[in-house]
Length: 310
Image (tube, rainbow, N blue to C red; front, side, top):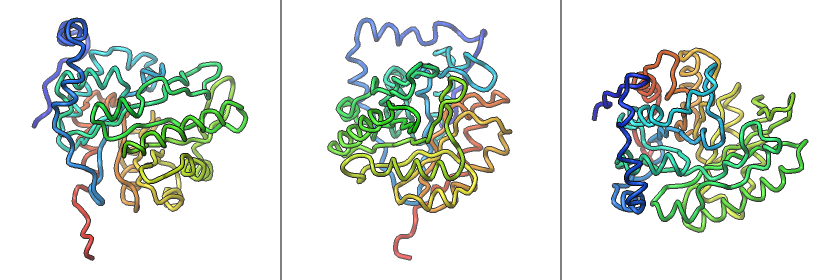
């Protein structure tokens, strides 16, 4: 299926998603029906890397991309971009907060796709107590009811913040709740520090490795746990730190698209890397070509199953 031709910006029809508002007003049960009726993804396999588009940033108040402080604020424009990305058959699914996921279900944009719900969005960007990242979005039961494949949790470990231990405990409980329902727990760990009143993630190789070690031990089982990790220097050492399936996150990189893609390509070649979970980098590319950015990233993934008899 080719990407839909979508007009974005001021020239786009402001009424193009009015039917979503009507459904939410008159028939809110339509979301649950759409979730139950949709065709599920056939399932993850070793060697077949997955491409998941992330769209849970606005729910944490993180609407900036690059130098644009409100890039993700226009929900209609974001839905346009998501539909363009999801129309590429190489895109396996979406990671989204409940509001965006409900819109995509109503649009029928998730046929045959993986669904990961975003669970803890309480650590608002810039919040005075940002590390106290409470679970304010999807619950494990809600994800099971939607027929989702798993849930994602941001897991920031700030040794200088006493809220860290409560946040870790909440993540451990969410991992257990997902595992009880045989759903994937996609854990996104960082060692974080406070700098000039902001929470900053330490992206040094040693810090990422330490975050993996800590996050891997959360919960009473790791049977359904995946890691969601940034691409940093010496990714070979990072991937040697875990046996868990790992997807790479994109973040909000400052380098050129060519540099970013090269980094992803090298990391995707490492054992244990199951694919990409990327949002802003591809939904808001510097040249504005969402379909082109998605296609470029898709070309990096291995889509051939491994020969387990070798």
